[in-house]
Image (cartoon, rainbow, N blue to C red):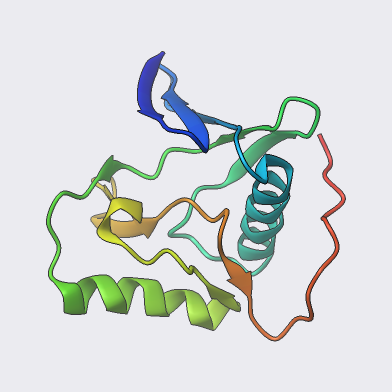
Length: 135
């Protein structure tokens, strides 16, 4: 496994078979875990193809496993970055951390993708109780 991120909020590893493993820790870890799981399921249900697909969610370990959406983007002009994040609106999501560090590029189809949904908002929905998280 390759550690690609290790911060106060999470640790992210990339497996050799291409899965991404994210473990939440620090302040509000449970809430951030619940929100990312909720948003990824919401996006999958609506057919959004430029975000990771949730493969596994373990609420006892605050750990998710997702598909890999490509390599992180180092440089992207502000207008293009904004356009990529605005696309989420069609799927009822606002990212709320719309920064280039949350954009990847998937070589297989030449698509910019968006990652890291723990601070995202589901649009048009009232404040939600924590999601029921299924393993």
